[in-house]
Image (cartoon, rainbow, N blue to C red; front, side):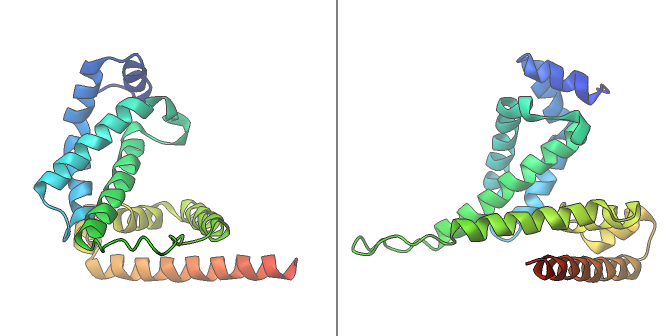
Length: 191
């Protein structure tokens, strides 16, 4: 079913169940595959299926947040899938290591609000830098670190050697690190 993202989103926003079914048919395999890669080593088939279901329920409830000017419906869907899968992964790992609660001690936050805000700002900086990379490098970066695809798969799909992908990723990491460090140094000089 080929239709524009705007039309599809419009159908979902109007509460059309057939639109959700078509979305699942069109992108279910992509969502399932991404979740499987994120949960690899800690989740089972039922965890993947439950997480995929949660993704589509979330899309159904959050479709009003979709903004076509920021990217395709598929990309938005896969972003939701990635973060839902990461939450699921953390939950599975946490459940595997449940420790008895000591009610005599006060709970301690894992990180303070300031550190959380700073980390978010740093991530926004990094993603801004990634978005300014040349198209091929940006594609390789997203496929390796966002979609968790292997270097072999990326190389095959883009007509490159695995070594070329590996070298580009190494160069991108160095570039991002240098730019991030440089921007921090500039920020410190204004203090």
